[in-house]
Amino acid sequence: MVIFERYHLAPCGINCGTCRAYLRDRNRCSGCMSVNGSNISHCITCSIKNCEFLKKTDSNFCSQCNHFPCRKIKNIDKRYLTKYKTGLIQNLRIIKERGVETYLIDEVKRWTCASCGAVLSVHKDSCLKCGEKYSDPLFSEINN
Image 1 (spheres, rainbow, N blue to C red):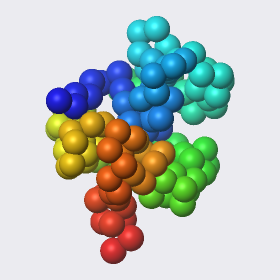
Image 2: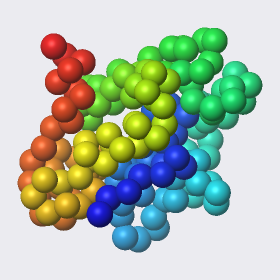
Image 3: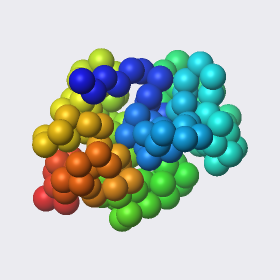
């Protein structure tokens, strides 16, 4: 069964539990907010994770920042919408409005393969385990 925890959620709205670096078998990333921290260089040096304004928030989510959505978030959101068909600003707004626990429950439904039950990767349009194609249902909401 797929389970996501609070530490899976990056400040920018990415669910690290759906990242292909987290899901791979070798040289696996532990997620940027895990107790051990990420071992992936671009996550360690991430300008969003290391943002001076983010450090002033209680939640450690960009949506709690007075500058949200800033240029950095808008840029990564645009990239994720274009390349991976998922919206990070939308993710952050849902977390802010509905709370982390509700969001995590919804993420299980959103990122579990209907065919085999494996975790789906935000970076692929098919299941890494069985190859079944899928699309992010929240992407459809953004574009309608």
